[in-house]
Image (cartoon, rainbow, N blue to C red; front, top):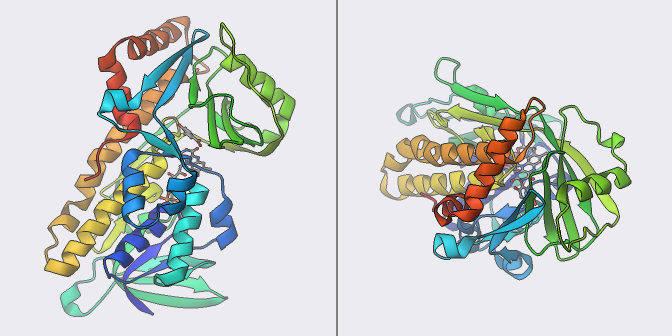
Length: 396
Ligand code: FAD
Ligand code: DHB
């Protein structure tokens, strides 16, 4: 098989890139190691920045998002048993975010691709990418080797894009002496649960407490998504439903009238926290996008949004190359993306370290966190800095 753009991975990055290229008349093939049901049902992110919503809509993938997504104009920061609202449109000149789950974004993009797009192969595991720096003049091309239906297969491409997540194979194409990585680990993880109960707040609540961080989020008007800071290595089986609700109650507690509604917990999982960046995000004719190139801790909901901004920049660059012959945007791809990536890395680190309790934290550290939260919720300048980062900078 041969194609213009070989895309490895059918997460949000790979699926959206395929759609953007299809809309511009550029053919691609998407290879995904897991089956369709797995990709459509794994519980992950839930918050779309304004720019992500705009890109999905412009790509023709926004119909259900516009009908079912919930527009949110702010978040609540809860600390010292008090609530404080950060108003996004007022602080950012009208920007907001939308609650629409990653599972639904993937379902919408898969349906479009299977209806009228190029090939999207599930259970097609990529084993290697070869000839990344093949020179177009020589007639040579990068090659993807993959396994599908029990057979070894080859896909010859003009360009290869690794959208294969943190555990993918594409990143290893960049030689060790070219690739630089930056990493930070955190001494805690998140226990995430999905509960069949109406959310107890209209907006997301990020709660600082000396018992640890808690987050109240949602998937729909009848489904809550909740997170608790837990120690690394936590086994979700050790957390009964009652223990989870009790702990959420304790961490979200307020002076005043507010109650957390309980309901059946339908899924539980622990997710680790890591900051990670690979530079550069390309090598020869091979490009990296999304989690394949960078990971953020989830506080602040940047992971999915970064994947979307990477492929938006890359699609524009590939279209320009095909239409005009100019590789200027492709050459700038890594630098363009990394600027935004490092902003999101800083913001996610800031949100994480301001809201979580480090096991070695001193009372002094806690007072600094509270002072920082107090500053954000009493100064419009400090609040605007959070709001701009959360609702998202413009893509490009
Ligand atoms: P992915 O969604 O990881 O997609 C990569 C795809 O590549 C996968 O489908 C994988 O199966 C496929 N693949 C991998 N290797 C191969 C191969 N060799 N051959 C073929 N295919 C391959 N962000 C938030 O903002 N909030 C959250 O609550 C949140 N929760 C998360 C929970 C978990 C467990 C994880 C892992 C991430 C979470 N994130 C969250 C981050 C967010 O989901 C990611 O940033 C987002 O999925 C990135 O999209 P992607 O397309 O780059 O990568
Ligand atoms: C969600 C995840 C986040 O990391 C976050 O900051 C807000 C919401 C969510 O899954 O709903």
